[in-house]
Structures are given as structure tokens and as C-alpha cells.
Image (tube, rainbow, N blue to C red; front, side, top):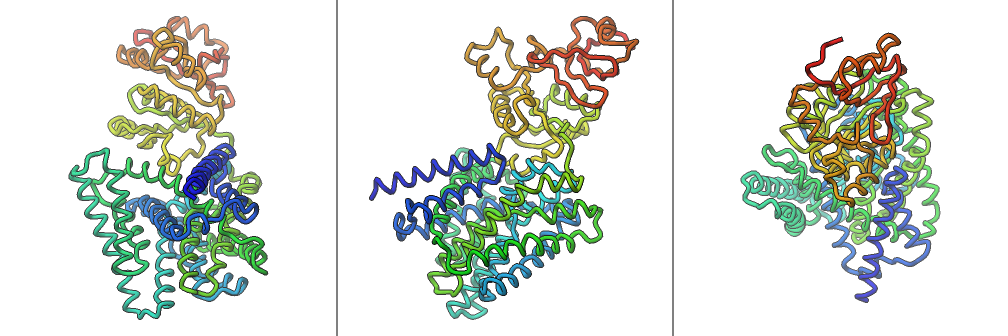
Amino acid sequence: MTIELGLMLAGMLMIGFLSQWLAWRVKLPAILFLLLAGILLGPVSGVLDPDKLLGGLLFPIVSLAVALILFEGSLTLRFHELPGIGHVVRGLVSYGAVTALLLLAMAAHLVAGLSWSIALLFGALACVTGPTVIAPMLRTLRPNARVANTLRWEGIVIDPLGALFAVLIFEAIVSRQEGHTIGIFIATISCGTVIGALSAWLTGSLLRRQMIPEYLQNYAVLAAVLFSFSVSNVITHESGLLAVTIMGIALGNMRGVHIDDILDFKESLTTVLVSVLFILLAARLHWPLPDGMLSAGIALFVIAQLVVRPLTVLLSSMGSALTWRERALIGWVAPRGIVAASVSALFALRLDALGVAGAGALVPLVFILIIGTVVLQSATARPLAKWLKVAEPEPRGLLIFGSDEVARAIGMALSEAGFRVMLADDDWEGIRRARMEGLPTFFGNPASPHAERHLDLTGIGRLLAVSTHRERNSLACVHYRQEFGRDKVYRLRNLTPQESTDRAALSGSLLAPPLFDEEMTHGRFAEMLGQGWRIKLTRLSTTFDWPHFIEQYGSNTVLMFGVEEKGALRVASTKRELEPKPGWTVIALVPENRSEI
């Protein structure tokens, strides 16, 4: 039994990794492949039977995993960001979400025959999108900035709020089922809220005062979350999920508490938990589904896609500056994700144990909705965006990894040439200076899970890795080579070819071509800027072509970029030597002591 259990758990980890990797390769939400893998392993082939494999451990494992998923999701909600997200997003995550909840609940009651209590729970779960499904879809959808920002912020904000809706409705159902009075229900809600807030305050205070060493902070937060969840459940039954949700929201909004490293750790842990959890949950589905369940699920999916989502978007966007084309695309895109799948499965387990009628229908209906929205919208959203003429043209912007004087100088030159640039780095001082110079920035490692959720790549199609960290440059190149394409990723050497070892030179050549010329390094570029060299933009003509430019500024001029007459950017690299032509705008590093044209 021990060997079988160990092998099955290891196998699920490997299958989960392969599902995540496949999702990364094809730029689709990983939840789709995880659910399909679980269905193949469970009801289709019969290889995996979670109830038999884990027995009495199944419910505690699922409960703890969902608690961590809810905490990680709620940790990303920032109250100070809400005023700036726009009228449409605020509508979508407030009265729009409530409208969607009620309409979906009504549909579930009328179409699937669910009781009103289970139907309301289904509505709360089914109205939630999330960044884990929105972010991969936006990469292939590539809508204009207003549509992309609306969908991205909706997913970020509604993820924890939707979980909170669902938890509150679940608490009400459990209290009613167990014959509790309204006073006990209020006590349950109060207990979860108080324990969550106290846990956040205590954890945040210890972190703010540096009373926990940095290498133990992730461990401490993990232990605090699970301990708060368990203690809250012991004091008042089923209040633990509310406690961890409140704890995440409170900790994420505490001043002076730096949670970026904790968030990165929780996101990595959540990736593992989600991978195993969804395979387990999908494997518990019974196939074939009970009579009428499949047709009811498909009908709910159609109603959610064609009726509920368009109506809520129409309601939320009234009075906004969005065009009808932008509203139509937003009304089409609303894939369901992690919160809906994980929380519905946990609630179904608990409600089944309580004997609540209709609880067994919750998971298959939610899973059908998830698979339907992800598959349909992934296949149709990009063609629809093109037809509506709200799709971004070929991305011309550049993501620059680095924020020192070299990165800022390159970013400023490209910005002056009319290209969108985004400087990303985890060096706060460099990011602060870039912001003061008016450059768009992202504070964090652009190859991190945090960047997957929050880094806005709308209109960006190239990476220039120019930081002072050679290894991080290489990792960023590997990460964005799949995102942008092998020919759209470049790096600025940190060592000359002579200084590099054979192994380092070989690995570097496999990752991305070096920028500018064979001898150019980050150190040399910074030294030249310190000596007074400057980056100059000049438009060439038939009377002043590139040879004249070289004659004017000297043969040691470094050609960096060329902008064709139609606006296409050419990048000078060791793999691609540029030959600027009349009509081009050249961006070059020139000596200070040369006279102006």
C-alpha cells in the first residue's frame, strides 16, 4: 500500500508538471489539461481512485490545499489599487458580480433542478474568473490595452472576492443543514473574521519588526495559515476557509510588510497543490454522469456564455468610454478557473457528508463550465477580436530587464523613437529612478510567477535582457523565448567572449544573441556613458546616409537599432548586422566630442 501510494503521488506530480508544461507551450490555462488528465486517469481508465488511495486522508488534504489556494489568491487583493482600476472593473467585481451570481443561480435552479441554496453556491463559484486563466488567454488574444487591462484587473480582484462570496454562502448552508440558529451563523462568520484578522496582524507584526529571519519567513507564513485554518475550524465548525481568506486580504494590505518573496513562494506552492489537487478531484468524477447532468451542464454553460456574461458586462460598462466592440469582446471572455474548481470540490465533499440534496451535482456542473469556457474562448477569442477590430497589431513594444543607467538610457532612446517600453527589475533604487525619468516600470523579476499575474505585456513583443546579473538575464531569455519567439529575445553581455568560459559562451549562444557588437558588454556600455558618450536618434536621407553618419561621428560609433520607414524596429546584434538605408531612423551610441549635424 505504501509503495502504491508513493508511486501514485509521484506519478500525479509528474503528470501535473507535464500538464503545466503543455499549457505553457500552447499558451492555454493549465487547469484545462489538469482536469482532462484527471478525467482520463479516473473515470475513463480507472487507474486512479482517490477515495480508495487516500481513504480518510482525502478530505483533510483537499481542505488544507484549498485553504492555501484561497490564502494565496486573497493575498493579491490590494485595496489601494481599487480606485485606479476604472469604472468598468469596479462594476464587474461589485454589482456585476452579484448580478451574475443571481442569474447563474436562477439558471442552475431552473435548468439543473438544484435547490436554491446549492444553486446560489453554484452562482457564487461560477461568477469568478481569475488571473491563472485570464493571463494565458490574454497572451494569445492580444486585445487592445483597454480590453486587456479590464479583463486582467477583473480576474485579479474578483478572485478573492468571489471566494469570499462562496464561503459565506457555504457557511449559511451548513448552519441551516445542521439546524443552527442565525446567532450561530453570525458567530461562525465572526470567529473566522476575528481569527483571520488576528493571525494577519500577528504575522505582519513579526515580519515588519524582522523578528523572523528571512529564510524562515515563508515557513512561518505557511504554518500560520494552516494553523489559523485548523484552529478556526475547531472553535467554530467550517469557519477556517473564511479565516484564511480574511487573513490573506488583511496581510496583503498591511503597510510596511514586504510580501513579494512570500507571494512568490506561495504561488510556487500553489502551482504544485493545484496540479495534484485537480487531478485528484477530476478523477473522482463518475462517468457516465447521472441522467440529464451532461445536458444540464451544457445548457448552463450556454446560458453563462451567451446570456449572463454579456448582460453583466452591459450593466457594468454603462456610462464608460468603452466602445461597443470592446464591450462585445469583454462580454465574450470570462474563463472560469482555480477558485471555482477547487472550492466547489471541497464544498461538495463536505455537503455530501452532511447529506445535502444536490451537492453531488456541484462538481460536474462547475467542471463542465470550466472546460467549456476555456476551450470555446481560447479557440474563438482571437478571431473575434480581429473581426471586432479591437486586437492589437503585431506587438512593437519592448520589455527591458534591468533598471540601471544602461537600461534607462536604452529605454529612454526607444521611447523617444515611439516604441512602448517597460523596464522590469527587482532593484528598487533603479526602478525609482526610471519612474522619475518618466519610464513605465514593473518592480519585480519579470520571469517570476508574480510577473505572470501582474506584468502587463500588452503591445510588447521583444525582450532586451540588459541587467547586471548574467544568470538572471539567461533565465529571462529562456522564459520569454517561448513567449515572444526565439528571434525576439536579446541580451547584453556581462562578459566579453574572451572572459567567458567555453561552457558559459556556449550556453549564452543557445539562449539569445548578444546585443550590438562582439565587444560590447554591460560594463563597457556603462563606462562609455560615464565618459560622456550619448545615444543619438537621427533620420537618414539620400543626402545624409549611414556612411555620412559614420564620417560625422567616427568609426567607433555603436549602431544599436534601426527604425524602418514603416516603423518596424531592427535590432543590431552579433547575429544580425544592420545596414541602415535612407529613410531609416538610426539609434546609435556616439562619442561626446563629435559636433552636431
